[in-house]
Amino acid sequence: MSGIPKKEIKKHIPVKDLDKRIKKLEKDVKVLNRLHFIKACYSGMSIKEAAELNGISYSNAYVWFNRWNEEGPEGIIPKYAGGRPSYLTSDEKIELEKLLQQEEVITTEIVHKIIKDNFGVDYSHKQVRIIVKSLGYSYSKPYPINIETDSQKVEIFKKNSHNSI
Image 1 (tube, rainbow, N blue to C red):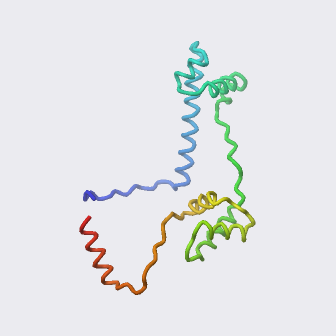
Image 2 (image 1 turned 90 degrees about the vertical axis):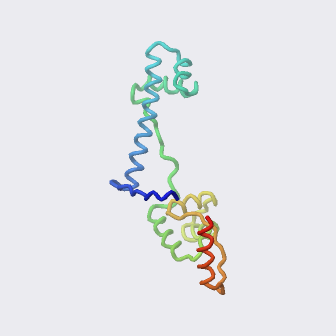
């Protein structure tokens, strides 16, 4: 560490609101890029030339061009379907979190079994990891602790290993 004190950031809005603002601006940037493409077409460039100028694929360029011609400015606004809805409702996720708090050790296999037994949903292990992470858990490797270990020797070891860094 460099000895510079860490400055704390003021959290003016909740993280969820910050995420919403980020998503909106990302969408706005996509619309801006599409408008640049349309403007290039207005100036007389071919679809291919405008696509190259704006760094987009020809297939996307033709989709944007056709949507603009058919729907006008509304046609270039990204249309997100929102993805497939979760099999677990918000209430079920809260219940899952309560069930996980009762567990001493949480593994993907254990969470998979809890979800399957309590909610009847058979998620893939990858999706279980995504759900666990969304609940605020992080990945860490459990290490066995020898209960017969002398705590004083452990503290001496920690001090000595800290000084050598």
